[in-house]
Image 1: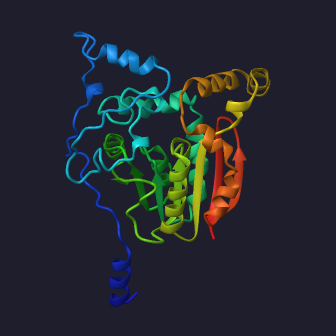
Image 2 (image 1 turned 90 degrees about the horizontal axis):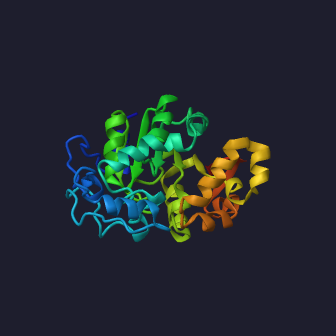
Length: 295
């Protein structure tokens, strides 16, 4: 490649700044100040865990200048997802959530991530949106993809992810408003993301996915399966034994405000409307995975 071509290519590539997550200090929230010896915020913790529905998360008014703050984050992100105290905004509880997620899913997600990552072995660059603690991005990196990025709106989750996987680039941002150049990536993964987004933002996010994917780029989606939400108890036990009972109970007891809207949609039709061809559509239990290609 000539020097002129290299300059031209560099001008076309626009990536958000990767900050030094190890050195950045994030403000503590009330969830970081829980103390069972002094009973500080213990009552608030109990109310947060046992209340019906999701409460509002208290997002700090100010973050370091390089990060999106309370006024830039959409309201749907500022809630206590899954009943987690203060949602995705704490230094300590987010770390516990990352480690507890796989246990909550009975270890099934490790093999699911491995299977999804196998779809990207021919890719040079992959973006994981809603990356949380970075496990999906790490699975993609493990199959030999050189240029792997993770995107998430929570700086607290990103700080943990960057500490666990220093060879992956983690940036704060929104799936519906990515700060990457057109056709930047060969592949995109989204694991347990879209069911936590209102429908209008899903449309915006898929539009952005189409924009930042290269021609014929791949999009892999993994979301909670409709099976455990709609299956009858006896059917779940007969087909999946106690795992079926457990996941149906989990689906009924973890409040997810946008899950019904996600499951009402015909996902292949949704992807088609946004310029994708579905290559694989597997509704398992507890996960539903799809692989699509940009057309």
